[in-house]
Image (cartoon, rainbow, N blue to C red; front, side):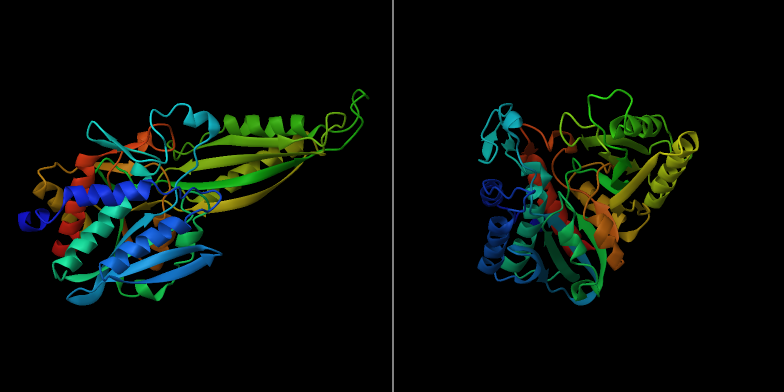
Length: 382
């Protein structure tokens, strides 16, 4: 594989990533278009065939392909083009401008450097090198660049049953894993829960049903409820809103509950538990009323270490003189939606999840180069 590794022009790859990090493709509120155009430009410049999949106005996914010796069992590489915003408070904690790539001490700083423009551009650059050097992989290589991963995953949802996946078998998610192999991913589900009360004038003692106080009862039950069969599952309240105005007893209190699920724990079980808690309170207080609206349910998944894809990645890491290390990915990724196309997934990419969604996000250039070489190894060796 060394001859393929020698094709990587480190300066060119760094420049491609730097230009991408300079693009402020924040989401919410869905500003991916300039990043989409940048990816399109790279594909056009290098003669790689691609198509776009419209999702919303000015928002679209990109599907690119390098044809292999066979169409059977294609490998899909995926990465998202959106990044989370930088708040006014967070920007004060940055040592460099968050939307201007800065290279220092072997690291490239900037929002999206780790999550996940480095992984996306690394895979794209690997495809560019194959095309540029007339290297035909054993099977088709597909790149799925998505929008909205940081919010409702509208991009990966839009790819459900897309014909491009009809002959695909494997899915490599290029999210930041410190180059560790994540052969499983936790699930996630969340919902807005509305507790109903009765309005009254704030000056009258004991009148009305304060929805805030009623909601606290349910929030406390959620806080102290554990899932004994799945000890790594947890849920918690992350947002709350109530009140008409300061002089009125609120008759609605809405709070968001976010659940992170141990591998194998079905998202629907979370809401069955919530129903039990609501019933417990209603048995104590017949006037208690709560409804909820589930925002999303993302299944966990597991890929066996003996799978051909995992073995190929382990072999590729060994070619890079790196000992394979396995982990469970704690966040949720586009894999939770794309696997519905019957794909076998794995997550591996440059960057450390611990430095993303916060100040001074960075990716080590060493990992950037290693990821590109690994992706080339997978593309040509599997």
